[in-house]
Image (cartoon, rainbow, N blue to C red; front, side, top):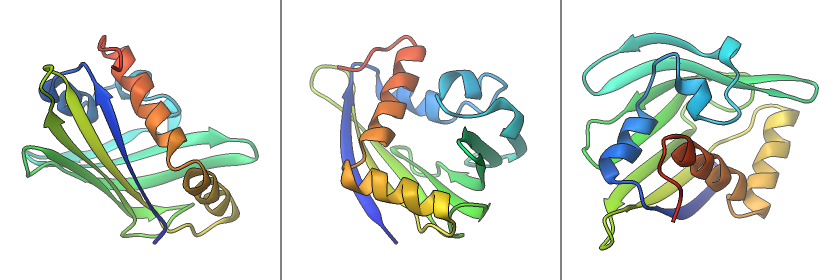
Amino acid sequence: MPKVELDIETSASPEAVRAGLLDFSDRRPEIWPGLEPSLFEVYTIGDTFADVKEGSRMPGGNIWAKEHYDWSASDLVTWTVQESNFCAPGSFVSARIAPTDKGGSRIHVIWNRTPTSLTGRLATVLIQLTRGRPVAASMRKALAKLGTPPA
C-alpha cells in the first residue's frame, strides 16, 4: 500500500481534535472540507466504532468509501475502507493525537491507501509527491472550522 506519514500541530486540545474526527452528525460535511453531503451516510455508531460512507466530488465523477472508524484507543482514531470505488478494502488512515507542551495537539497521520481506479491512482501519486500536503490542508481547514486555528 502506498503510505505517507505526516505530523500536524494545532492549538486545539486533544479532546477537541478527537471530537472533530468523531463528529458523525449532519455537521460533518461542514467540518471536513471536500466531503460531499449527498455522499455522507451513517450506518452504525457504537461506543468505540462507526460505519459510515463518505465521499467527494471530483472532476469526472464522485469518489466514495464505506469506512469503519475505530477509536478504541484513547489517543488513536483509525478509519479503514470496507468498500470503495477508488481504493482497496483494508486501506486506512489513522490519526494519533498527543498533547503538546503548549496545551495544543500534535497529530501523527498515517495515510495508507491502495488505489483501484484511475482517479485513485492520480490522487495517490499527488499525495505521495507532496508528502501528504492535501491531507494536512484538509485537517487544518477542519480544525479551523472547529474554532481552533492551526498553530
